[in-house]
Amino acid sequence: WWCGLQPVTVPTVILWGGRERLLSSDQSSPFTQLLPNSRLEILPHWRHFPMIEQPLEFVRKVEEAL
Figure 1 (cartoon, one colour):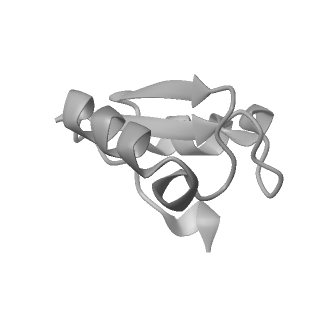
Figure 2 (figure 1 turned 45 degrees about the vertical axis):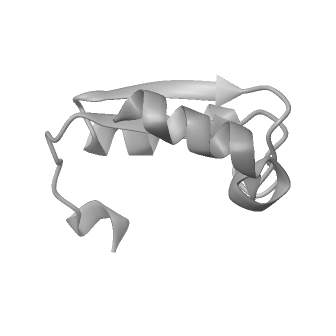
Figure 3 (figure 1 turned 180 degrees about the vertical axis):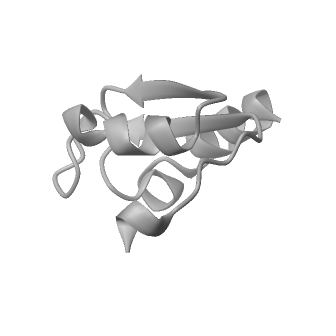
């Protein structure tokens, strides 16, 4: 199903946890390819659920992106 996805050119910020264990940051390429107008930001101490584990920092990052 992944190959059937079309690129989306909407400006996008991809926030990625540097301590993510399900999808490591070296697996970000397919996402950045499908989002060609994106910026990848890897946050070294974030894991899989930053919205739960660092809610204030997560909200600040989302506000910066907006």
